[in-house]
Length: 365
Image 1: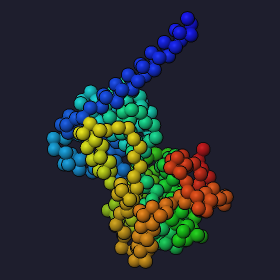
Image 2: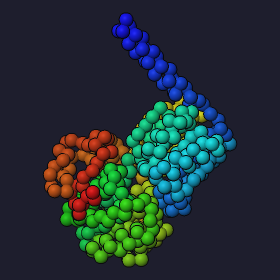
Image 3: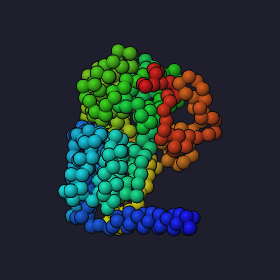
Image 4: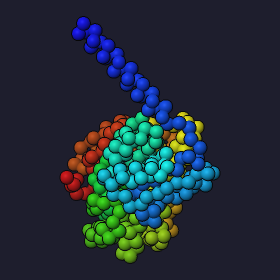
């Protein structure tokens, strides 16, 4: 009798799970653009000239592409509990799709999504998904590698500085890819890092560039959200590789190029699915081949032979013949961590927490 009761309870539990699952999936219904009111959550100001600026350009393009669509934006939202309040407010005001555009919104997105199974959530640069939560990012390590080729060719001191936000896999992966590019063309060069522990802090970004300049860096790379680092490089008379957008306006004579984003591809893709009622949770990680990431125009000082080298390497990546984290790759101590002929998996790249050979300094704890 006890066994029978347990059996019935188990069956009922499975049926309940199936029903809940079906209900959750069915709750995402097709919607007209006028019903979507996508809500965007920015970690910085839309006018930061970099990260949030490029998301905002894509948002405006999206409104033009979908007649009847109106979107909502909240800027300067801290990563943490306050993000939940912002998303709840957007939903109360009619948002049926939420785009959370910074890594630290990951857990707040999960919490709010559980309370609103009929709302689509897209989290940028995270890894946690749910029935109504998808994640999106790009293989920006690819153009970072290409920009590293340029930096390695342009340095005279063999010291390249790097202004970095937080020591998380996303940033470490980009730093490593940049360094692999530098070292391919200049094995003597080293990349010195200053960590900001912030996504956007113009004063800190400028001070970081000055500190790297004092360390003899004559080229600066960066993973920060504003144009402050390029501004500082221009003032000091040293070259800079920007990030997110074409930052040549901040460093008109010293900007070499920049890994850049085309977020509109993702936003158009998601809205078309929502309109058709075919949206489902997935992990989007597109690269140079798809066009989600690319390189900004070159500065006037970049020689033609360097441009040709970059194009040759770009073609190798786009063709699928090769990618940045293919072996042999050594770590900072000279140990081979990716063997010749091997390649890092996506999971390994997404959890990368060590420096490649050529990066100077210790990993922050």
